[in-house]
Length: 434
Image (cartoon, rainbow, N blue to C red; front, side, top):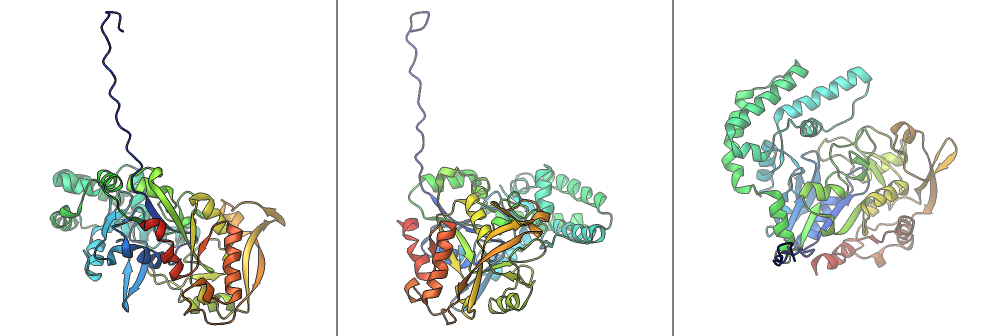
């Protein structure tokens, strides 16, 4: 009762939405190039929606379907399935010319936008690093760093800005371009020409653009949907948790799913970590288990380890389980998808990194500092190889005994069950599809 003696009106309770659909996430557990595209392609066969949540056209996912090879850099590779809706979240930076070229090449057609001058700036910055420090970062020169820098500086431009008011967009574009020209006097930008191209894109992209948060909410809380999230890059390239500064510019760990798609963590379901049966890395940076010898060369040759985006040869080494356990600590993998096991078929003995020492002292963690990581001495366990062809195996039971032991060793050491074959990857879909 109130002081006046009248009865208070009952408070209206807003019903709390149910958890709704959960997304299945596929993430790289090393330095990228683990084979995420292949796993996504399998899972996407029965998906309703496949999402990219972070990064940009610096990613490179290759999928072969009916002897046709598809190379994806920006579009989710699950788009090969004609029944799938491909969704690019607000956390992804988009290079419009690259997007349309990729859609055309692959015969399928609210975010930050990457312009041609971002790519030019990326190249200039790499050149300056080389001249000033004698070493660059080894970026893909796709403009990813500059566009994320502009986003953090609040001077970036988004797709919603392009579609809202082109006059205001043009003024902000000119200001951003002139800012870069003042910082890099050798930078040439055809501002008027670029704006003409961007204006032409407006009508082309307008039918494909939705409010990302609302669209994702409706997908999560509408009718049952099978939603797959395709991570780009990998855990050790994460801007916060990777081998900084030799990392990408976005969060490619599980937290990036929520911030990139605008969805709550309660809607994250299975998180699959994709692990290559050995370790590779493109470009510069510490690589404790790297083999700069005939072993590394054999892994590179047998695995055809060449970057999809850069065309650079990948550095190769033994599997590093310290690194995998670190990725698991961050991402909470519910299962591992082990790829390219057959590349190890020719080895009679296989080493696996299980611990790190620095200055002859065992350390219980993965070092955050690059200089410390360079000094790491890897502690290896040597396992017997199987010295036989496993490429035709389609179930775990078909693998040689020593290959099975290798997989079990990984599972037990990391503490996460592995999905070792195409068949098992398909079997793990049961939790995703039912």
